Length: 195
Image (cartoon, rainbow, N blue to C red):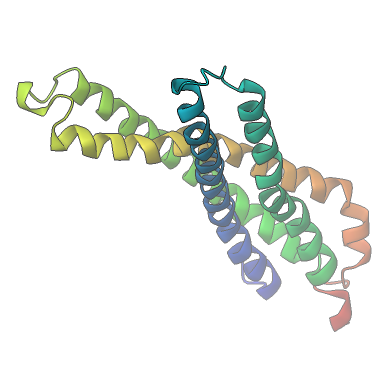
C-alpha cells in the first residue's frame, strides 16, 4: 500500500464497481423505458377497432438489443481497466486495481443484493397488510414501497450479481495478459516510461 502505484491502482479499482453498478442500473432503466414506449404504442391498436394481435417479437427484439447494447460500456470498463492499469502504469498499479476492485465489489454486491431484496420484500409485506389495513394497496405507504421495489429489482437482479463478473473478469484479463503487463513494467513494478 505504501507504493504510490499500488495505491493509485487501489483507488481506481475501488471506484470501478461503483461506475459499473451505476451503468448497469441505468441500462435497466433505459431498456424498461424502451419497452414501455413500445407497449404504449401497441395498446391502442390491440384494444381499438383494429384488434391487432400483440407484436411479441418486437418486444423480445427490444429487450435483446438493449441487453447487448447497454452492456458495451460496462464490459469495456471491466476488460480495459486492468489492461490500461497494467500496460500504462505497471504491474503494481494492476495489482492495486485488482485488490481494490475485489474488496469494493464484494462489499457492494452484498449490500446491493440485501438492499434490493429488502425493498422487494417490503412491498410484499405492505401489500399483504403487514402494516395494518390502512396501509394496503392504494395507500401512500404502498406507493412508496412500489418505488422502492422499482429501484430494488435492478439492485438485486442486475447490478449486485453482475459485480461477480467484475471480480472474475478483471482477474482473468490480468492473468491472460500477465506477461505483457510484466514486460511493460519497470524493474520495481512501476510504469515502463519512468525507468
